Image (cartoon, rainbow, N blue to C red):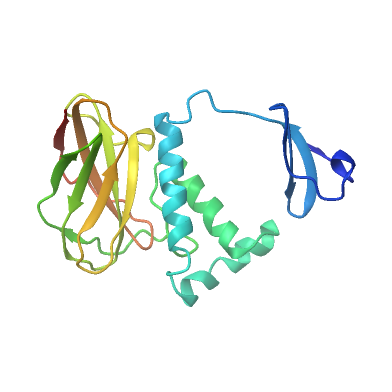
Length: 208
């Protein structure tokens, strides 16, 4: 990455040129770098990272003032916003296959939610996964993993979706697009303070 002044004969260039170079900003400073495209944007790792990123970004607003305040020291140290500190810390935890936390640091002592019987339903190139919540307790979300063959182990690179626990409402996660075949799913929940629960049990679905 190269920092520049007045990139591309402008004061504030952004975007890519000829699929080779891209212009943008980082912490308010313009830069230019080569344009990098992932060889497989739907690899297990890519899907897992994007799924967790989406969950964290969507639920930052709802975690409350007290948890948000715990990110201020980390944000000051890194010269970023509390939101960016929250995102980077939790994405790093996820890469180590640790659950995210709404507060800094993660204590991992909360009480997980209690779940009911999980069901799966096949759709058009999709599978709908439904996780009933019978007692929310300190639960924050449910992780859905897909693997083959049956008996696979849940891991960082086979996450396909993250669902928010909202009281005792069912958590629904849709996995799409899917080619015809048999797919196996397992699930783990996590608490507000970053405790990763045990596997909830495997379910399967047949896409025709």
